[in-house]
Length: 414
Image 1 (cartoon, helix red, strand yellow):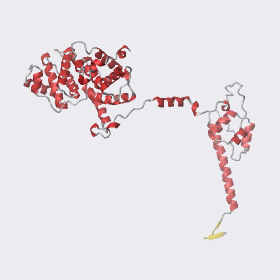
Image 2 (image 1 turned 30 degrees about the vertical axis):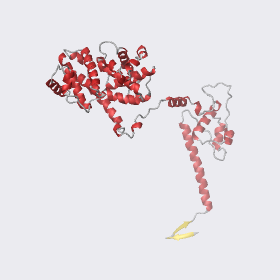
Image 3 (image 1 turned 90 degrees about the horizontal axis):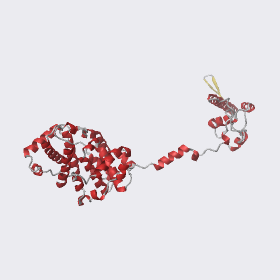
Image 4 (image 1 turned 90 degrees about the vertical axis):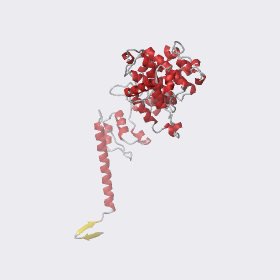
């Protein structure tokens, strides 16, 4: 058909012309494919000319026949073909299967063992894959310890991770120099131990909260590390620290007259109020610092501890309060060690799972130094003159835990 438009003639292509164009394009595509594969083969390290390309019809081209005449290395041919070509069908593989040396012949550097003689590869033969699978199966999962408190608004599950991350950052400000007692002219370690052992009994008589006791000891150490105190004023420092901790933690605060009474009237009301002003000004009213107790609660929850383990951990941690040498350990480390030592004492073997390590940020090896000192404190808890903690935890209120549980001697002997 011929159409005319502004003196231009457009001839409609016929079916014969279309078939010729398709044939040319197909041949051009095959030639381009062979050229590209040849370039890839030449870029391979130590590779020779690309051997033979099998078309879909199963016939060999002239270039392929020339490659077979040159008798190229069958190993390189099989490797290159496996990397570049599409998988061959079984019939084509039988036709093009190269001749290889027998399995009894020894391989040399020039003629390595062909891949066809090796054992077929399977996923089960990969040793690295087996190791990875074993590690995955043996790895202990980390439990979500807050899932049970999801509906408890007081537990603050949404913010609990951020809260304890903040506690770990701020606990360094809660620590005191390990040699601060050397700066005191009229005091020593034994006097501090006597004061805290007495305050633990007073705390128990007043039936105060556990947070109050640990904050009291923290206020005493921080104040003594910054200000020199005479020996006759040391008991007053302890009473005022207890008074401030009660104001911060308790709902019902003891009266000043009660503090004067338990001191056997060694101090007056004005003495208590004056020391309160001095202590607050020295500490710059910074009372809300993390102590061992909030960390203890969190780590006991991570360990899924029962009541017996909870009471024993509290007993061990209060023994550490009296000992001046334990001040060199951070509060979080002391709390984690108390939980770890309590578990080992009850079960009779070492016990520290991945959940406890994740939430405490301490491995078992990091706890061992503090653990050995805590076990030694447990061994001599009922001996000597300072037995206030031992007598406190030998009552029905605490399940006679101090008498029932012996110290974990195997932790010290190891």
